Image (cartoon, rainbow, N blue to C red):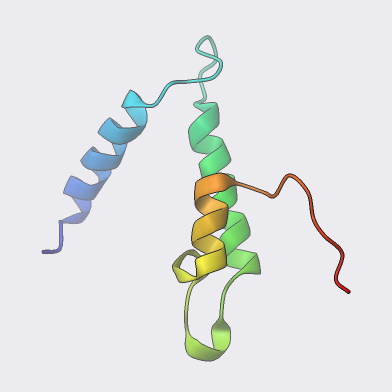
Length: 77
């Protein structure tokens, strides 16, 4: 079932309003801003253009959205 755009917006507004704000005294919601930054990074770096898959629909993109950047990277052999 596909939700109307207005219903999606209401759902997302309720969802993010329940998330804890790291710095409650500021007007912006830092956790939301971090997530939006991750979405932007994934959209630009993990897209699979040859098969028409957006970055958020790739395995690497989903992992990055959920956990953020890696703590350490191993060099390629």
